[in-house]
Amino acid sequence: MLSSAAARGALSACTAIRRGTPEREALFVRSLALAAVLSGAALAESVPPAVLQRFTLAGEDTLSVVAWPLYLDEPALYILAGAAQGTASLLRSDTRLYRRLHHLRWSVRRRNVFDYTLHLGHGLFDLGVMAAFAFGDERARCTSLAGIEALVSVAATSMLLKRILRVSRPESDETRKRYFNGLRDDALPSGHTMSAFATAAVIASEYPSSAPFVYGLASLVGLSVMKRGWHWPSDVLLGGSLGILIGRTAVKVNQRRLSVAPGSGGLALGMEI
Image (cartoon, rainbow, N blue to C red; front, side, top):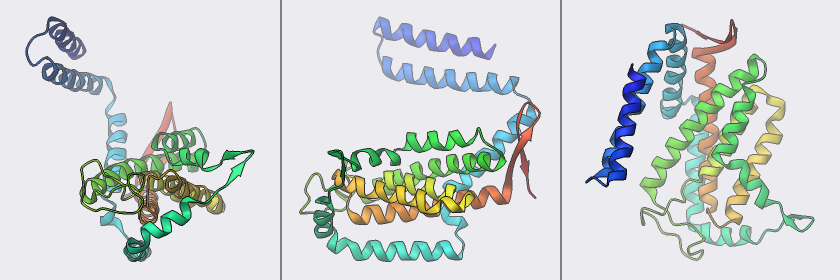
């Protein structure tokens, strides 16, 4: 019943747009939002309460990871303090250090390696990596859950800091770095580096022997975004440090509150009190 109401709402919006009625775009957006809400309500009616509870627990954990500053332990505070001090010390030498790193060359068969390693920090790529872990054993599924929650937190944290700091990118002017500039300036922190290091931190926490490999790949992402002219060294340092903190927080929250295990017909989530 709710699904048919959602469909009728979306259909009326499309009809209004074709007829060219006033404020058609606003009507279309409102109708789609209404359709999404009604469809979600219809889905909720058909989903067993136990399944809804599992999704609720996962949602609560995701919110906890987004609020990662509230869950910092002593080692994390040291990491954050070191990142803040290192970023501050790089601000004055960012332009000079960037020009040196920008001339770095690494080619294999006349192809720039950094053009490929750049994609390792793309959010969708990292999300795909974390989703692939869901098809493994219990430890892999825990890795998948923590990784996805970490990437959600990375997106929120990166977007917030970028909008506040508004640092210009070196590709616009590598001789001058501007702060609190235009709304389109969003260099600090590096989102690609945050995503790569958050992914590496989650994987390394669950599979310690992989730490040199995954952190090495994440470091290549940091070099790649500087080679592209997207970020300054301080952007990469802060992004990498925040990514590690968020990844560690995601693992910590899930180990304390949520466990994933095979269940009848799929996965079972258990809450630790």
